[in-house]
Every structure is written in C-alpha cells, then in structure tokens.
Length: 292
Image 1 (cartoon, rainbow, N blue to C red):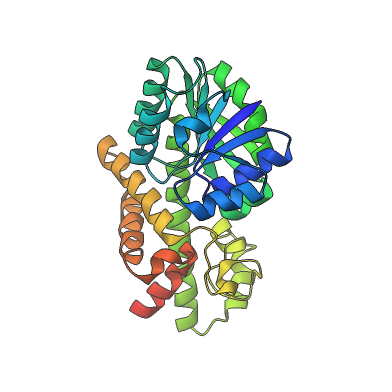
Image 2 (image 1 turned 135 degrees about the horizontal axis):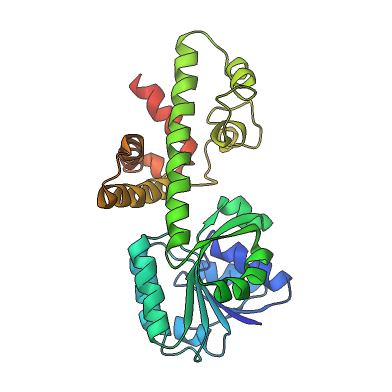
C-alpha cells in the first residue's frame, strides 16, 4: 500500500518511520525543513508539497496541530488525490472540525475517518500508540492493519467524530488526574511526607492512576518519568492545555456539569502561557508548589 503522510513532527515523524519499517511505501511532506530531513533519513520519500505527496497514494495520513490546519490541508490536497482515497486524520482537533474535514473528503469523492492517538512521542516512536477511531465499519476494517503498525491498540469508537470525542474525554481525565496527584505531593511535602512514602502508599491504594505510576510528577519514584529529566516533555503542557480547551468547548456546548474539567482547562491554560508550555504536563506540580 502506498501512503502519503502529511505532518512529520515529533509525532508524525516516528509514525511514518514505523510504516516504512513495516514495508509500506511512504511519501511525506512537512512545512518544517528539519522535519522533512529527519523523515528522509528514516526512509520516507520526500515531496515538495502536500498535493504532490498525495498523488497516487491509497491512504493519506495527517498529523497536524489544529483543526484549522487539517481543514486547510484538505482544501489543498483533496483535488490532487485519486478518487476513493482513504483519508485518516490522526490529529487531535475539535469534533466539529473533524466532522467537517470528513465531510469535505467524502464530498470530493474520497473516504475519511478520524483516528487521534494517545501515547505521546514515546508511544509514537515505539509503535505502542492507542488509536481512537471514528469511522464506518468498512473504513475501520480497511485502516486497522495500517494503524496496528503504528500502535498497540486500535479502538473503534463509533462514527465520524467519535474518535475525537473519546480523545478529549480521555485527556480531560488525564489532566485532572495529574493536577490531583501534583496537589497531593505538595500537600504531602507540607505534612512532612517523603515523595517515596507517598508514592508507595498511593500506587498500591485506591488513589492509583497512570499520572502517578507512569508519569509521576516528582523525581525519584518512577525513574522513566519526565520529572527525572528536568520535565523534558513526553507530552508538553501546551498540548495538554490545547486538549483541555477542546474538552471545555465541548462541555459548554453540551451543557455538561463538568466542573473539574473546566477548572483543569483553566489551570493548564494559565500554566502554558509561560515557560511551562514547553515542559511536560507533569511540571504543573512546580506551579502548584510555587503558589502554595
């Protein structure tokens, strides 16, 4: 199968590289020259433009920053793609934008689905991502083998837009959990608890969660967590702020009484306005400590 991959940044680059390793013929494009260069070193055939990349491709994968970028990209490439091309957008964007992009592709004579991911850069590199797919049954069956090369789990969440809905719900839980875990560590510090003692209790008790046991916000208890690398991001706080912003928009639009989700969005939005934007989202513990 020939694949076009548009968006070869920190997530898209490793994903495209894994497709090449699996034997797919991948043509890629990115606006950033350095990203293109890295992709070429990993075996991706480089195109001079997005429309050039999609020519002759059976499937087009996009991994872009926002709904605006996805819609703009589709405007450029839908006319250049062969009829019936399958468009798989792996970006994290607003549900309405995902549905609009899918409808634009279908109206142009193609097939489309949304398949946002969870797992961060480490998951993209190790091909252990989870894909949350919004698609019809036939399109899901067609794209599953491809996504399975780039990830460990592929979940059919429903029709168009359902993948994005699942992603923003998941990240709302994750953001709120990280804030709660971070507040607990700062509270523990004020009460004289060591980080290790608190971790040993909570990690085996009812407060156990991924934010604690895999991405612990303080150095020490989990050696692989970004806290031990001066919060170099696995998942940047700016991206968490973006995802929680999408969740907040959906909360307000749906009239849902999700007070913690809205507050988490506010906290991360404020954190991402400053130097915290480029740090891992677990660095929120430092902002909580500074305010305490």
